[in-house]
Image (tube, rainbow, N blue to C red; front, side, top):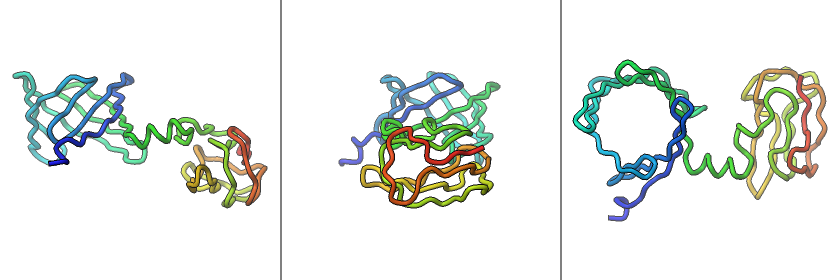
Length: 173
């Protein structure tokens, strides 16, 4: 069966330390080492785990799908886990991930492209996550969003403009 051999690679950051996690139907590894564990959900968000003859209790406290993070407690220790899959890695390699966008200040082009639409106006108040403009790059339409609350001070591009990587498109204050 083909599905038995399909594995998905993730990068997990747990309390600041990064791990390569591979998850498949027949195999799970962390940093290339096989992981075997019995996991039973006791009630919603609460699990009992047995691994290497040791017993653990785990509880999920908070999940944030947008930031791809989860906070959980294993025995008496709290862990914050963030996960990136192969698509997040691809966006990161293309410079389109949120980690490479300007925090607060100016909105810069994450890569060369064509401005398809400007969705804000000077003087407009915006909140984190609001759509600012649409940039076509590599035949994909990318909606660039505000990375922080602020106000549009100046728009330096218009529909149809070609932009280069790191070119300031919108000045925010």
